Length: 172
Image (tube, rainbow, N blue to C red; front, side, top):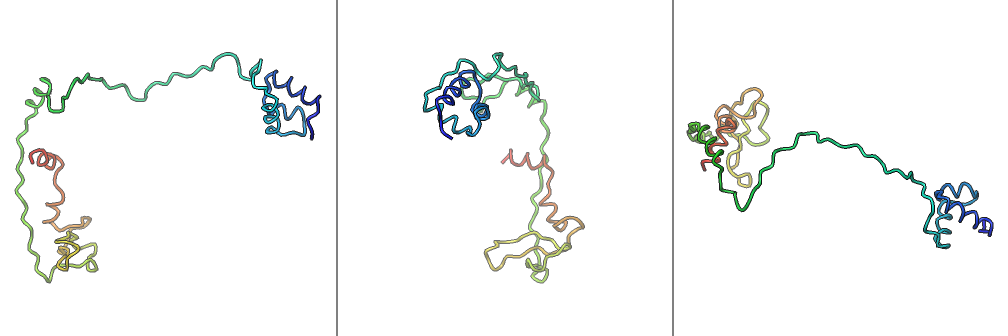
């Protein structure tokens, strides 16, 4: 396919009429969209009198937020340690006596009851004792309850109520 004078004139007319490169290629026949684009650029036909887009602006739907906006407070300066009077009153009203947990003493496990990783099963306590990199590392190995990985003693250490954990963190 060669670009004859008639085909070039038709290309110019279709381009100024606002047809797309694909539409012009289909109209001319025997030419690809990329060939049309290349010829348009070589001819310097960048401006169009008519656009292929509608003249009316596209109407966009107004999106409503899925969650209601949170009230914003204005922060001026460094207020990291500053409490508002309202917050202080709320803290005073919410004073709850802190329950002090007695420290749980580590259980002495006789050497014959200690378990290696190969001896663990669903009925043995899997509480690790010592440093895993040392030779004297072992697992508790005592009988564990059904559905829990630890014996009764180590369950008391591992499972503390969430409020007690938060209080001990804030106190320490």
